[in-house]
Length: 151
Image 1 (cartoon, rainbow, N blue to C red):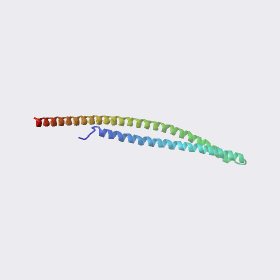
Image 2: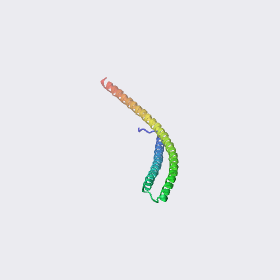
Image 3: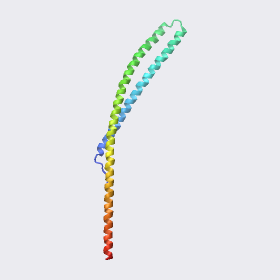
Image 4: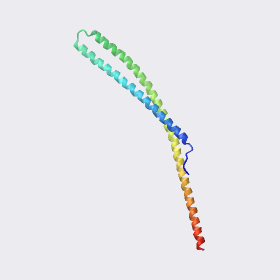
């Protein structure tokens, strides 16, 4: 007799649900990483613009329009950075929500898996006791058979 877990379909469903939650979490985390990388690029471009502005000021001369253009770029870039920070904060919340869903799915899967282990252990114990009972019965029958021969 083979072990058959009555809730195997439920366990399989929970595993699939956990896998999907893991996938969603990874995708949300990837989006967050991309947003943070974009923010880093924006900050780097501001830094580069400051360096360029410093070089232009050192050179002197008629650099007014170029400096104004750089200042406008920096001002607009700071606005974009603020918007990017808001996007990152929103994505952080999404990532945390996905992490919680993943944690819940993992807990649900683990509960069913532990229950399956428990049922399997019970099954093994039951099979061992049945086998022992059969062996005892065979020993008794042999002993009785030997006893009948001896008389």
